[in-house]
Length: 517
Image (tube, rainbow, N blue to C red; front, side, top):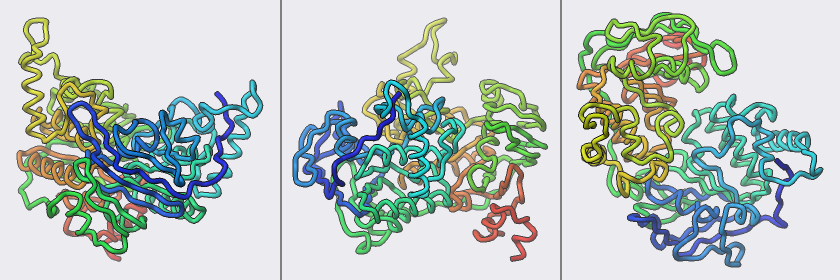
């Protein structure tokens, strides 16, 4: 390990990508796309999942090489054969799925791969001090001695930004930077980005969240199906203009229609659990969900939502309380037995808990069902039947993939989420735990996922929706339970509370007091 920062002689003033084309087997990811970024601005790269946004920027960062086209920096052609070349030129990238080593500290992650100024000895003390300086300068508060696995998702993102700044990045690409953040963390990030722009950094803001693009960007470029649809100054367009450019049609929001709930499917009594830092994260959760009902959990990130989902799915031990599914105690059941009892789980971290990156689409679909009698012949797997089933599911759930043998890591975030949802819903569950089901997916995929959740509700499934998107929670839920510091501060009918009242409850105000304001 080594730790001397890489610095460029001067800040980049402009980057231009001219007529970029990139092909993969069976996929034309970018076709003749032109894009540019200037110092002192935020240029949003907008488009649905699979539109080619990340692929285009990975070519600028040296992860891929263009099949056609040119990259020009301050008037001079450049060719990046690796990210090291791009970093040396002053270009950094914050990936949607962070490139951090969980078992190393913040300081060790920042120093990883760089030369020490005191070789052969390490200079982690100097790195730690520099991290504190950068954190102070840009509003990126993080403990240099903390291990990555101990940090929240928002804190991990700060580490990635500090890594880029430490290496002297002048142009920084942020790939879906708000996909994993709470509204409060998004506001903090925007303050940081504005500081960076004021100091002459150029930022590429890859996103599909229109209200954020409108709030933070100076210019917008829209891609669809790998092609350039248009670019413009943000001040000259409306949200509806951008929607039509992205999707090619109008998108109408869905909402849960009144539906008579059935019997209690999931009952949670006095649930308690510890967090990763040996502090109690769940402090006596009581909740019940009926057949044909969606109960949404609202709350600021870090108030026990993740631990609740993990306890309900069998991934975290409880210290007290019970979980009943149709009256059967599943509190200490392992995940596979819970599935057999009728529970399905869409995890918050799809690439960590929901899929295996190197496995194919088909292999990920059959992660838990490969031994099912209908897909075996004696002791052997029936690959023909598995392939037929995979093709059927891919078509039914509109999963865009070159083939069912494509590694899942090559799919866009929205298509990975569709596949995980297909796997879980195909079991026709009695209870569905959906944690952040639309995090990091585009407008079209979000619309699709919402439709599937409402269909499951209509089919009689009891759904617990855990989402940090309050608009999503209010749109889909029949009732909303608000969590604060590991407890439920109140449960309200969707139409009986305003956003402001729910927000007060999220801040720890009692339901009675919030409803009176």
